[in-house]
Structure formats: C-alpha cells, structure tokens
Image (tube, rainbow, N blue to C red; front, top):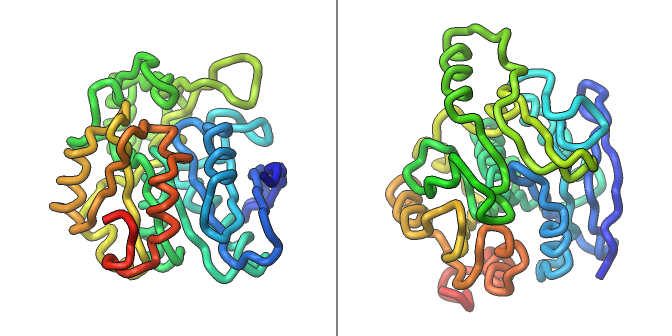
Length: 284
C-alpha cells in the first residue's frame, strides 16, 4: 500500500488548505477526489484508497474549518466550500489528470450536489456513498438529526432548535448570527477532543433544496450506494426516493454500515465497473 502524503494547495483568496494524497502510480490518468462527511473520517478514507480497484490516484481535501490551517469550525462566508472545491478540482486537473471522478461520503454528497448544480460537467463520474443529501429528506433515521453516538459517523450533535432559529433569521436576511455554533463533532486534528461548527459552515454543506433537476443534465456515470446496516439512512427509503425523484438506481451493499462501506469489496466492485454497460456488470 502507498502511504498517504499530506500536501497543501492555495485557494482563490490565497488561503492554504490541506489534502491527503494517495498517489499509487505516476502512470494513472484518473484522479478520485473524495469530499468527506461531517467528520473527515481519515482512517476510513485511507482504507478506501488502499483497496480502491480503479487505476486511479486518490485525493481527500480537508474542508476549511476542520484542520488547524485556518479559523477552526468556521468559513468566511456562506458557500465558500463551493469555491474551495472548484479550486481544488482545478488544481488536480492541472497536474495532468485526464479523468476526474468526484465522490462524496455522507454529508460530502450534499457538497457534491452543490457543485453539480453549478456545473453538471465538472466531473467525469460521480459516486454518492452513504449519502446525506439534506436533513429534510424522508430517508433518514431519527438519530441522524439528533444523534447519540450509536456509530462512528453519528458521534456528533446538531443543535436542532438553534439551527431552526438561525435558519429563520438567515432567510430574513439577518446575518449577524451566522458564526454561532450549530453543531459539535469529534475533533480529528486537535487533542482537545471536540470541535464546534458554525451555522454558516453547516449550511454551506447543503443545497437549499434537493430537486429532480439537480441530476437532470448529468451525462456522466452516477453511482449511488448505501449499506444495508447504515446507522443514518433507511436504505429502502433512499432507493425509492432516488428512483421516484431522479430515476436513478441505488446499490444496497449487504453487511455494510455508514463508514465501512468505504472499504467494502462489493462497493469497490461496483465503482470499478461503473463505466461498463449494465449488462456487463458483475453486480446487477
């Protein structure tokens, strides 16, 4: 296994942000860029890179506010993640990659939807893994919005009532409270243990609405996968919603939960074959 290497890139406002690179071969012309969830889940992302079957190098940009390179738990303005991620994709393309596969995990899938809304052709393929598209969708378990630490990826707290009040003020164009803490997560980049996320950071991670039009103009391959033991998502509800709303299938991975789907062999078989016609795929 190629050991991941930490590197940095510069955004349009001259901020320095970090990313984890697993460059397995100089000969690969495909880059897989993973957008992480409400926590970075670094150990799981490393496992993904170690078992990835595609001839591709894997990159994980750590979103602004998570590590210690800039203001912690906050962004400078609502929507800054869109700019940061566009800049990172451009930065990777400049390294000579001919194909960019964009993959979201959990809440990272919502960020991916935001990018697609602005540019449906930004990637050559899209992978939505254990997707947390929007808290308003009727496909999530109760503990997903008010978690109690039942699994690796639900060890966070969203201040639900506070967020509702802040959202009301935001829609009234009252912006003075946007820096208020809206969630608390495990801190992967500091020994203090917990990191508070601001309201404007949190809403920068979701599209305002998840509509049928979001994937309408996407011509590239789209893969949506969830484990049947997911702690956050009701798999059959997600499958029905994606079929009814987008006309897109959902692969349900037997035995996988919200995080370990990232290195599940069946999941990697699916993304390895996602460019093939349906009748040539091993898993139907």
